[in-house]
Image (cartoon, rainbow, N blue to C red; front, side, top):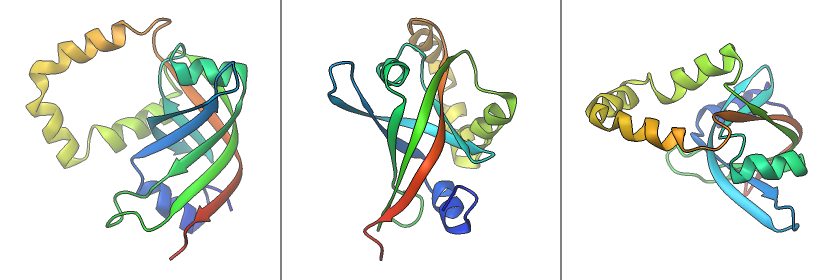
Length: 151
């Protein structure tokens, strides 16, 4: 299976957040929820290059991603992906940025939420400005996929 597989593609389109499991420098497991998009069978996860997940990936590129398909009438199964990740400073490539905007900012409900919270945009800017090292992203190349708890 790959992101191009119709069943996997549909499941990813119905997932908004991915749980990213990485290892700390001490070998402890760490999981964090992140936004993601798929472009050309590669996943782009939004986070700062100096975030905990970013630092973990920089030290150990092996990750496990868990998708719940939460837009699909409640999760009945999960999709687990194993892959090799790399953390990058700055913004993702343009194609990935456009996919992020289309997925998280432009759908009618998302756009309405953004407009309703326009007064809080300064808070968001302040939050992101605090990130040491500025913006970044994690790029994951999948190596194995499997569905867990099939219906």
